[in-house]
Length: 327
Ligand code: SAM
Ligand code: SF4
Image (cartoon, rainbow, N blue to C red):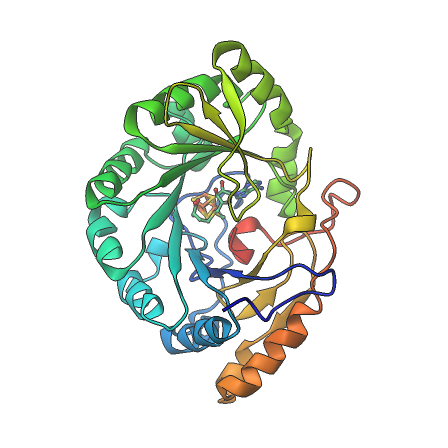
């Protein structure tokens, strides 16, 4: 079934990113401020039943792809149980997870068994001291998590590396070699001005065009591979299986092909990462809305999806952090 959700710019919406928590055990400085504790109260978190209803209704409207994200999704208790419930819903064909991997060594097997097939892992550096400086956490846990994920059978495993000038841009080649060695896909991401903390990080903004040109001096990169359902533009390292994606929201935005919406932990549907347009679903869910009525609300919400973000023209606009929306 094709998606029935078409926004007013003619874009089919077929992908839901679902934040199961706004909490996290790391504090990547571009995402969440140091010492931040002002999290959503548990009474406002959607319950597993409420999440299931939303996903069931999206599924009935033709959404095939769901990604669990956050905050750090593995901080939410019972994530494998939730994953299993969502994977079993009619129409949901692709359930994936974005994680920082600190807790993956413990949960990889259960998550894979529950029906998650693909995972993305944030990893900005391979140097323990630098990892600590960027995230306040421990690199060895992430590496253990990644190896456990590979052993559990996740494929592909994608590494997301946010590139920051003067902080980790000198490690692009090292990350290429790491991904070649372990069979991971690599994606570079430009910093986005999400909240004060994201805006501070954009002082370290570096266009990925620079990284691409640098890599091209060392590797032969074949363009146009893997036209995915997402924002990354992929290139392949000639003679290898390695694919490198470039996610360039600022230097080359991809809003005209945007196919996604995001649900935050408190049940607010955000229509764009870089705009405030949203539609609160929690009051409807708590009032016991039927699936048919919820369908109508979701169709109305999709109408609010803006044409594009304004990260370049109005970088001060978004006050919520990435971890709040569900990146
Ligand atoms: N905790 C999980 C993780 O780190 O993968 C999932 C949530 S995290 C918010 C999702 C993605 O958003 C990560 O790849 C992270 O690097 C990215 N991200 C967070 N803040 C960002 C910012 N200001 N600019 C660009 N990417 C950002
Ligand atoms: Fe946590 Fe992910 Fe944000 Fe880092 S990027 S603070 S791991 S939610």
